[in-house]
Image (tube, rainbow, N blue to C red):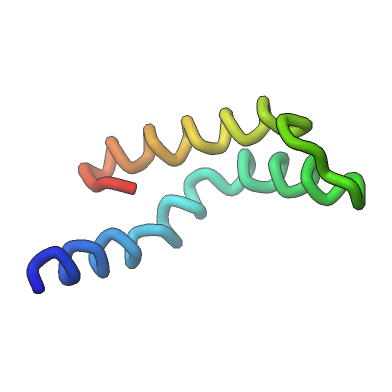
Length: 65
């Protein structure tokens, strides 16, 4: 049950991570919603920036994704 407790703690941190990376998340969402037919790797650069921001913020908060 310890692993479940730790997972719940990590999940509770997601709103904070998303808040700190909201600008990158917005750019990624705009890219994905720009076209009805989204193809693989169309928004790869935006996703990479968003993921890097999430990872950096998680590291700063001393938590895992």
